[in-house]
Image 1: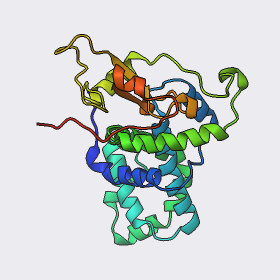
Image 2 (image 1 turned 180 degrees about the vertical axis):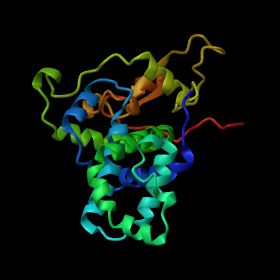
Image 3 (image 1 turned 120 degrees about the vertical axis):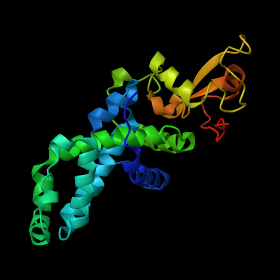
Image 4 (image 1 turned 135 degrees about the vertical axis):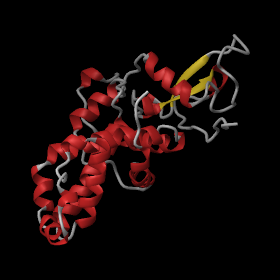
Amino acid sequence: MTEQNLNHTYSFASQIDGNIQSNICLWNYDEDIFIKRSLNFNKKTLLHHYIETTLWNDYNRDIRKHGGDYTHHIEDFYELFLAFVPSKNPFKNLEKLNDDELDSYNDKFTEIWKNKEMEFRILFNLIADNVFYLLFNNRSLLLKFNEKISETVADTLYDENVLTKKGKIPRKNIPQWVKKAVYSRDKGRCIKCSIDLSGILSTDRRQNYDHIVPLNLFGVNDPTNIQLLCQSCNLTKSGNIIETTDLYAEWW
Protein backbone atom coordinates (compact mmCIF):
# COMPACT_ATOMS: atom_id res chain seq x y z
CA MET A 1 0.00 0.00 0.00
CA THR A 2 1.22 3.51 -0.78
CA GLU A 3 -0.18 6.84 0.34
CA GLN A 4 -1.95 8.80 -2.40
CA ASN A 5 -2.64 12.55 -2.10
CA LEU A 6 -5.68 12.31 -4.34
CA ASN A 7 -7.31 15.51 -3.06
CA HIS A 8 -4.45 17.43 -4.65
CA THR A 9 -4.49 15.67 -8.02
CA TYR A 10 -8.01 15.68 -9.47
CA SER A 11 -7.42 18.99 -11.28
CA PHE A 12 -4.21 17.63 -12.79
CA ALA A 13 -6.01 14.44 -13.82
CA SER A 14 -8.68 16.56 -15.53
CA GLN A 15 -5.97 18.55 -17.31
CA ILE A 16 -4.27 15.38 -18.60
CA ASP A 17 -7.63 13.87 -19.58
CA GLY A 18 -8.43 16.97 -21.61
CA ASN A 19 -5.07 16.88 -23.38
CA ILE A 20 -5.45 13.21 -24.30
CA GLN A 21 -9.03 13.68 -25.52
CA SER A 22 -8.03 16.64 -27.69
CA ASN A 23 -6.50 16.56 -31.14
CA ILE A 24 -3.22 17.85 -29.76
CA CYS A 25 -0.29 15.67 -30.80
CA LEU A 26 1.90 14.08 -28.19
CA TRP A 27 4.34 16.09 -26.22
CA ASN A 28 7.81 17.58 -26.32
CA TYR A 29 9.15 14.39 -24.78
CA ASP A 30 12.47 12.64 -24.14
CA GLU A 31 12.69 10.31 -27.14
CA ASP A 32 15.14 7.90 -25.50
CA ILE A 33 12.76 7.38 -22.57
CA PHE A 34 9.85 6.99 -24.99
CA ILE A 35 11.64 4.31 -27.03
CA LYS A 36 12.78 2.39 -23.96
CA ARG A 37 9.34 2.34 -22.36
CA SER A 38 7.51 1.50 -25.58
CA LEU A 39 9.61 -1.64 -26.15
CA ASN A 40 9.42 -3.20 -22.69
CA PHE A 41 6.96 -3.17 -19.82
CA ASN A 42 8.03 -0.67 -17.20
CA LYS A 43 6.45 0.29 -13.89
CA LYS A 44 7.07 3.90 -14.86
CA THR A 45 4.74 3.75 -17.83
CA LEU A 46 4.45 5.92 -20.91
CA LEU A 47 1.47 7.55 -19.21
CA HIS A 48 3.70 8.51 -16.26
CA HIS A 49 6.14 10.03 -18.75
CA TYR A 50 3.32 11.86 -20.51
CA ILE A 51 1.89 13.29 -17.28
CA GLU A 52 5.27 14.50 -15.99
CA THR A 53 6.28 16.03 -19.31
CA THR A 54 2.91 17.63 -20.05
CA LEU A 55 2.65 19.30 -16.65
CA TRP A 56 6.22 20.57 -16.85
CA ASN A 57 5.78 21.86 -20.42
CA ASP A 58 2.46 23.57 -19.67
CA TYR A 59 3.73 25.41 -16.60
CA ASN A 60 7.13 26.15 -18.09
CA ARG A 61 5.60 27.67 -21.23
CA ASP A 62 3.12 29.75 -19.24
CA ILE A 63 5.62 31.03 -16.70
CA ARG A 64 8.42 31.86 -19.13
CA LYS A 65 6.09 33.42 -21.70
CA HIS A 66 3.89 35.57 -19.47
CA GLY A 67 5.86 36.23 -16.28
CA GLY A 68 4.12 38.79 -14.07
CA ASP A 69 1.78 38.03 -11.19
CA TYR A 70 2.16 34.47 -9.95
CA THR A 71 0.80 34.82 -6.44
CA HIS A 72 -1.66 32.01 -7.14
CA HIS A 73 1.15 29.78 -8.39
CA ILE A 74 3.24 30.46 -5.29
CA GLU A 75 0.37 29.52 -2.99
CA ASP A 76 -0.57 26.47 -5.11
CA PHE A 77 2.99 25.19 -5.29
CA TYR A 78 3.51 25.83 -1.59
CA GLU A 79 0.56 23.52 -0.85
CA LEU A 80 1.71 20.92 -3.40
CA PHE A 81 5.25 20.76 -2.05
CA LEU A 82 3.86 20.59 1.46
CA ALA A 83 1.68 17.62 0.47
CA PHE A 84 4.17 15.68 -1.65
CA VAL A 85 7.74 16.62 -0.79
CA PRO A 86 7.97 19.21 2.02
CA SER A 87 11.75 18.82 2.35
CA LYS A 88 12.18 20.22 -1.18
CA ASN A 89 9.76 23.14 -0.81
CA PRO A 90 11.36 26.30 -2.29
CA PHE A 91 8.48 28.35 -0.86
CA LYS A 92 8.79 27.12 2.73
CA ASN A 93 9.12 30.68 4.08
CA LEU A 94 5.81 31.74 2.51
CA GLU A 95 3.75 31.53 5.70
CA LYS A 96 6.13 33.95 7.44
CA LEU A 97 5.72 36.73 4.88
CA ASN A 98 3.47 39.77 5.20
CA ASP A 99 1.63 41.21 2.17
CA ASP A 100 4.44 43.56 1.14
CA GLU A 101 7.03 40.82 1.42
CA LEU A 102 4.75 38.48 -0.54
CA ASP A 103 4.56 41.00 -3.39
CA SER A 104 8.34 41.18 -3.47
CA TYR A 105 8.57 37.41 -3.25
CA ASN A 106 6.10 37.09 -6.10
CA ASP A 107 8.45 39.02 -8.39
CA LYS A 108 11.04 36.28 -7.82
CA PHE A 109 8.78 33.44 -8.87
CA THR A 110 10.18 33.05 -12.40
CA GLU A 111 13.71 33.14 -11.01
CA ILE A 112 12.84 30.45 -8.46
CA TRP A 113 11.23 28.37 -11.20
CA LYS A 114 14.38 28.51 -13.32
CA ASN A 115 16.82 27.92 -10.47
CA LYS A 116 14.87 25.14 -8.77
CA GLU A 117 14.03 23.01 -11.80
CA MET A 118 15.11 19.77 -10.12
CA GLU A 119 12.78 20.38 -7.16
CA PHE A 120 9.83 21.08 -9.46
CA ARG A 121 10.58 17.99 -11.56
CA ILE A 122 10.66 15.85 -8.41
CA LEU A 123 7.27 17.31 -7.50
CA PHE A 124 5.78 16.56 -10.93
CA ASN A 125 7.17 13.04 -10.76
CA LEU A 126 5.27 12.43 -7.52
CA ILE A 127 2.11 14.09 -8.83
CA ALA A 128 2.31 11.84 -11.90
CA ASP A 129 2.13 8.73 -9.68
CA ASN A 130 -1.11 10.00 -8.14
CA VAL A 131 -2.65 11.11 -11.44
CA PHE A 132 -1.75 7.74 -12.95
CA TYR A 133 -3.53 6.02 -10.06
CA LEU A 134 -6.74 7.81 -11.08
CA LEU A 135 -6.44 7.51 -14.86
CA PHE A 136 -5.33 3.87 -15.10
CA ASN A 137 -8.89 2.86 -14.22
CA ASN A 138 -10.31 4.55 -17.34
CA ARG A 139 -9.84 2.12 -20.25
CA SER A 140 -11.51 4.40 -22.80
CA LEU A 141 -8.98 7.08 -21.96
CA LEU A 142 -6.17 4.52 -22.15
CA LEU A 143 -7.37 3.54 -25.63
CA LYS A 144 -7.28 7.17 -26.76
CA PHE A 145 -3.85 7.61 -25.18
CA ASN A 146 -2.46 4.51 -26.85
CA GLU A 147 -3.82 5.60 -30.22
CA LYS A 148 -1.73 8.76 -29.82
CA ILE A 149 1.21 6.63 -28.72
CA SER A 150 0.89 4.46 -31.84
CA GLU A 151 1.05 7.55 -34.05
CA THR A 152 4.25 8.58 -32.27
CA VAL A 153 5.71 5.08 -32.63
CA ALA A 154 5.02 5.14 -36.37
CA ASP A 155 6.89 8.46 -36.67
CA THR A 156 9.82 7.51 -34.40
CA LEU A 157 13.14 6.30 -35.74
CA TYR A 158 13.94 3.05 -33.91
CA ASP A 159 17.07 0.97 -34.31
CA GLU A 160 16.09 -1.69 -36.86
CA ASN A 161 17.51 -4.39 -34.60
CA VAL A 162 14.78 -3.86 -32.00
CA LEU A 163 11.82 -4.09 -34.41
CA THR A 164 10.20 -6.95 -36.31
CA LYS A 165 10.75 -7.42 -40.03
CA LYS A 166 7.52 -5.45 -40.57
CA GLY A 167 8.90 -2.53 -38.59
CA LYS A 168 6.66 -3.08 -35.56
CA ILE A 169 7.46 -3.47 -31.88
CA PRO A 170 7.94 -7.18 -31.09
CA ARG A 171 5.70 -8.96 -28.61
CA LYS A 172 7.18 -9.42 -25.14
CA ASN A 173 6.03 -11.68 -22.34
CA ILE A 174 3.68 -9.76 -20.08
CA PRO A 175 5.14 -9.68 -16.55
CA GLN A 176 3.11 -11.06 -13.68
CA TRP A 177 2.96 -7.65 -12.00
CA VAL A 178 1.23 -6.24 -15.10
CA LYS A 179 -1.22 -9.13 -15.22
CA LYS A 180 -2.04 -8.70 -11.53
CA ALA A 181 -2.65 -4.96 -11.95
CA VAL A 182 -4.86 -5.42 -15.03
CA TYR A 183 -6.73 -8.33 -13.40
CA SER A 184 -7.40 -6.15 -10.35
CA ARG A 185 -8.52 -3.16 -12.42
CA ASP A 186 -10.84 -5.28 -14.58
CA LYS A 187 -12.09 -7.18 -11.52
CA GLY A 188 -11.21 -10.60 -12.92
CA ARG A 189 -13.80 -10.35 -15.68
CA CYS A 190 -13.62 -10.21 -19.46
CA ILE A 191 -14.10 -6.55 -20.31
CA LYS A 192 -16.25 -7.48 -23.36
CA CYS A 193 -18.63 -10.20 -22.19
CA SER A 194 -18.18 -9.83 -18.39
CA ILE A 195 -17.61 -13.56 -17.90
CA ASP A 196 -15.92 -14.44 -14.62
CA LEU A 197 -12.26 -15.41 -15.10
CA SER A 198 -11.31 -15.87 -11.47
CA GLY A 199 -11.26 -19.67 -11.75
CA ILE A 200 -13.38 -19.90 -8.61
CA LEU A 201 -16.74 -20.59 -10.26
CA SER A 202 -15.41 -22.23 -13.46
CA THR A 203 -11.92 -23.64 -13.83
CA ASP A 204 -11.99 -24.02 -17.62
CA ARG A 205 -12.00 -20.30 -18.46
CA ARG A 206 -8.64 -18.92 -19.49
CA GLN A 207 -7.46 -15.37 -18.87
CA ASN A 208 -6.13 -13.60 -21.97
CA TYR A 209 -4.18 -10.36 -21.69
CA ASP A 210 -4.76 -8.29 -24.80
CA HIS A 211 -3.04 -5.24 -26.30
CA ILE A 212 -5.74 -2.56 -26.62
CA VAL A 213 -3.92 -1.12 -29.64
CA PRO A 214 -2.41 -4.20 -31.32
CA LEU A 215 1.32 -4.33 -31.91
CA ASN A 216 0.47 -4.78 -35.57
CA LEU A 217 -0.98 -1.24 -35.50
CA PHE A 218 2.10 0.26 -33.83
CA GLY A 219 0.91 -0.57 -30.33
CA VAL A 220 3.41 -0.76 -27.46
CA ASN A 221 4.42 -3.09 -24.65
CA ASP A 222 3.17 -0.82 -21.88
CA PRO A 223 0.89 -1.61 -18.91
CA THR A 224 -1.58 1.04 -20.07
CA ASN A 225 -2.10 -0.89 -23.33
CA ILE A 226 -3.23 -4.15 -21.71
CA GLN A 227 -6.75 -5.34 -20.88
CA LEU A 228 -8.34 -8.60 -19.71
CA LEU A 229 -10.33 -10.78 -22.14
CA CYS A 230 -11.67 -14.30 -22.08
CA GLN A 231 -10.27 -16.69 -24.67
CA SER A 232 -13.36 -16.52 -26.85
CA CYS A 233 -13.44 -12.71 -27.04
CA ASN A 234 -9.70 -12.57 -27.56
CA LEU A 235 -9.94 -14.91 -30.56
CA THR A 236 -12.56 -12.66 -32.19
CA LYS A 237 -10.35 -9.57 -31.78
CA SER A 238 -7.85 -9.62 -34.61
CA GLY A 239 -4.55 -7.79 -34.76
CA ASN A 240 -6.24 -5.05 -36.80
CA ILE A 241 -8.90 -4.05 -34.27
CA ILE A 242 -8.55 -1.33 -31.62
CA GLU A 243 -11.26 -1.62 -29.01
CA THR A 244 -12.17 -1.67 -25.36
CA THR A 245 -15.44 -1.21 -23.47
CA ASP A 246 -16.91 0.92 -20.71
CA LEU A 247 -18.08 -2.12 -18.77
CA TYR A 248 -17.02 -2.02 -15.11
CA ALA A 249 -18.05 -4.04 -12.09
CA GLU A 250 -20.28 -2.09 -9.71
CA TRP A 251 -19.14 -1.43 -6.16
CA TRP A 252 -22.28 -3.14 -4.80
